[in-house]
Image 1 (cartoon, helix red, strand yellow):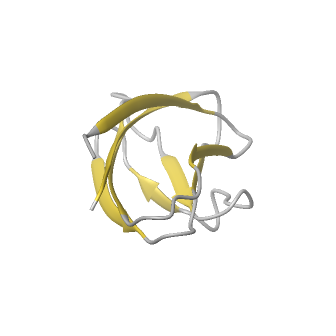
Image 2 (cartoon, rainbow, N blue to C red; image 1 turned 120 degrees about the vertical axis):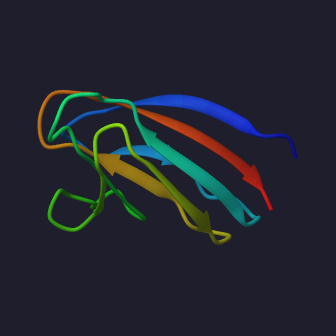
Length: 90
């Protein structure tokens, strides 16, 4: 499958970044914010919070593999942030 891309607006309520898939998915997440302390937190469920998620620093990129049947969610602590997402089936 070809490389897929999208941008997700992340706010203070968890937003689904990627839904369940029957295949393994390689994902690159990029926090497009340029200012200091503009974090995005992510996790595997809609219950992800700034206390329970892994965070991506401003202007940083994170790579992960999502196993079949899992989802990816994101949240931020204030305002809205833009999360760039690239993914493909592996």
